[in-house]
Length: 369
Image (cartoon, rainbow, N blue to C red):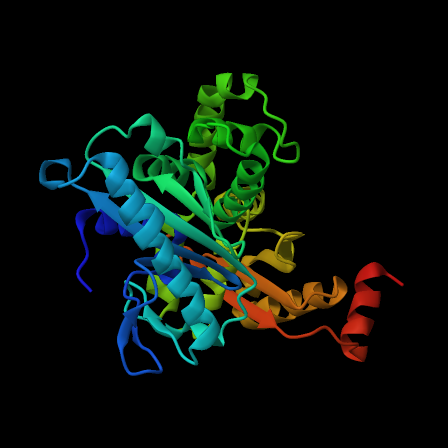
């Protein structure tokens, strides 16, 4: 289907926020009745998380009705019905094929979707009226909750919510907060500030809004320290062809919260910036409480680097077993030549934990038992 300017803008924002692998803007598919339909204008799909986005744009110069009537017709009626159709497709269709900007096509129906956020993003070429800007949500008679967000607010959210996990948490909080606030007028800026100050307490505190500038400044500083986009681009170029685990590796990084991403990047930089180790291996490890995935980052001393493949697999396997994990991601850093080029290799293990006598003995040896 044809896209308007606002759809292209939202797609660009989502590409910068959610990574190209998980942003889908080609969502036309053949329904079971033979008709070609669109799942949504934009789709974010990361593992068990799905965000369905409908986008409506009003051009003031070409408008035939006033802003309130346009909003009621295009946003609260047409876009709402499109969201309901999307949810119906997810429930009734056997296959829904969608494609991302990398040209990768997947059947959404193969996923075990456990959380769905419904968004209507509207774009105005003029300031919204007070009655329009007051609408932050729509709740259908069947209980379906739909977020209603002005495009500039959405752009700001994507600037400050550093990871897809942050956006998931924010939308979940936003739904709870708006349902508790009933008919009160709440600006998006306040909801955002409240989310960062105290997301567990839904009591309105006007002082939170006063700290918004400080919150944004702190996040801008964190973004420069945490952002992994350059690193993800490196993965795209080095793993896409050579390693079939490329997508799941990117997925595990994309699922981390800002705290988890900070842990990963801090350990990665420590190994990248450190001189070659003078003992067999330097290990930095952690487990993400949010995702249940383990992360093992390692660096071998120079005379052991030819054993990198065994070290990477074995140490990742041992950490996974020790912490009874189902998933574990291993990273090994090496300097393969004298001009200080850095070589990064990866291992990803995913399977249910089960007792293993060999790994049990290795664990006892590690603990000195």
